[in-house]
Length: 388
Image (cartoon, rainbow, N blue to C red; front, side, top):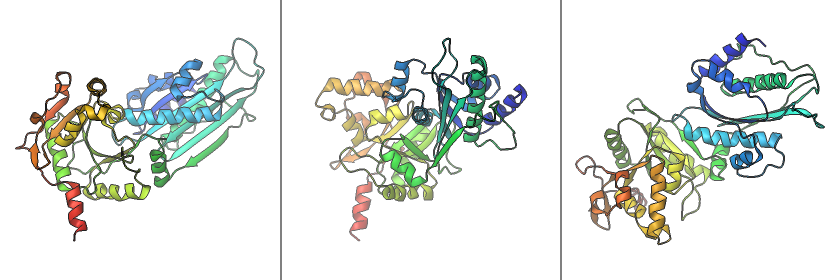
């Protein structure tokens, strides 16, 4: 395979909207150089990590692999990379997680095969391949090159590069990849989210009137049962107070004190946003300190009642110190809270009615009452509907 063909394929990858996180160990190291050497790499590459040591791989996966060089480990790496890509990508962009693990030529003779495993994970597809190389046929550099070629081709396929670019690796006729592939429909993807395998799914129902400049998300979280005009207006006002960003609603499938939503319940609520032309994220994190880890740098739009709970030690095991530590952790992620007024026990409350600790004051921003006031809630609307 010529360098010109490699460059053409990389250019094609960079021209797609797909963004990628790559984790590889034990081979295919030339892929990073090929991707970075062609202009446009920042369009594609979000992060690259090489977990070469045993402990690095264990920390990456959060467990000890049964075998460090195996199909299962490559798939686990791809899934972790996919979840990381979701967190780092531009809102609504397609993402791919890439995992590679290999056992190639070393300084000492190997008793086992020279082999490598690779996997790519997208929203609706898990693809994996294993290749056993002809022992003694190549030097380490040559095995690096051929494994890099195979990995680059897999990345191109995951990015949906057109087949018009002919790209064949330098594998011999006897080195036939063993390929497996699983496809997921939307219901299966949502089940994976409920089970905690994937961290969130975004439905980018963005209409033409919504601004979407920049990577920062402006997020209004809630149960949205139902979505109403007050929610929409609140997010619009919040956007006007932010210097750019991507407006989106966020619904957690997991509730802190209720059973998880079912797939059908999630899909019913998502339909509201599709009809309204508003982007919604389905996550599995009911707590804001976890949402801050999922969506670093975001501005969360909340009501005064939520702000009151956030600064109440009661919800941190009764410990003021735990409350401060948790919220300072949110602050380190670059997140802020935009607080709208809310009717609480018959009294309309705003941010200024609460005693915010000094360490946290710059995290909380008040939405002026003259810009937004809505006293009705989803609960009241739902009760009204049920009473008819």
